[in-house]
Length: 157
Image 1: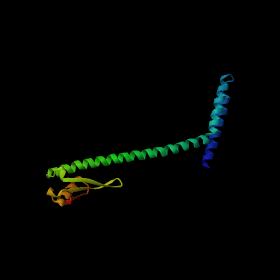
Image 2: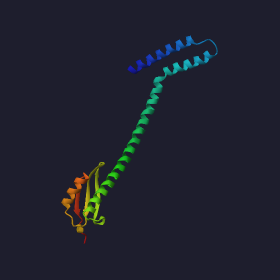
Image 3: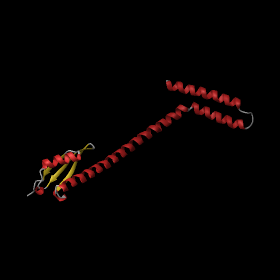
Image 4: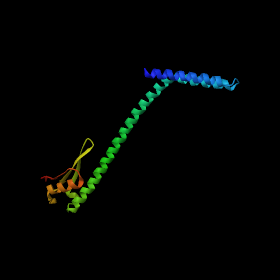
């Protein structure tokens, strides 16, 4: 109801403006062109709700498309951040293991993700690594800020 009241007010205001402009116009040939412009102005004010409805539909479609595109960007950014986090943690854990004399071929490192969140790192050590898994887990968990589990691989026969 408020929208109809606003539309009626804008039509009345446009009519008053058009009448005042027509009274101020001179009576020679330019006035015909000006009267056409005034008539178009009044017609636009009269048909404003139709045009606004059309543009509102476009805006909604555009916003839905923008929302989908934003979601795609967020997913891509989330994937990139996950790769960066994994890369940084991998480098940090490798450095800590190297400081303790564990070579890269003596372990396998993987990460556990759930719904876009890093839940922890899993470290599988070869039987000959000669490390205490509990002490290693405590040190890596403190230095990485992520839950780390370490286990020895079972030897296959």
